[in-house]
Image (cartoon, rainbow, N blue to C red; front, side):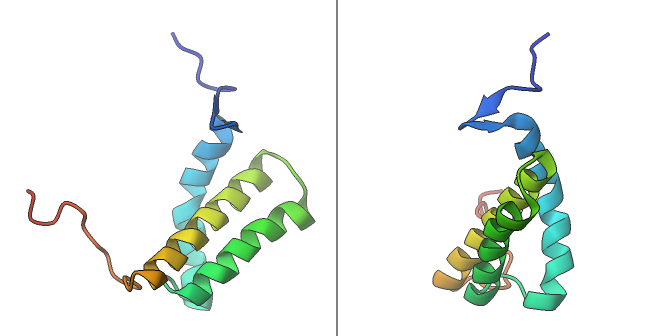
Length: 97
């Protein structure tokens, strides 16, 4: 059986990435009523928040996971704002099925 825990992907421990992936939807839904979702401002706030987690909460598995989740969601919001997809659910496979 392959060992998964403790392995790294792109220099980041797989446990941290799994926690980030699990926590991202919860963090996103908690912040949406406060700062919005899918626009440049919400993206900037979330990205800066991701940087602030490591600055003020220190480093650790949970802190790194929250930091990654916030930063990824923030960059996603900025890209949605840049490409004009704010607030929309875009199906990349639309029409293919």
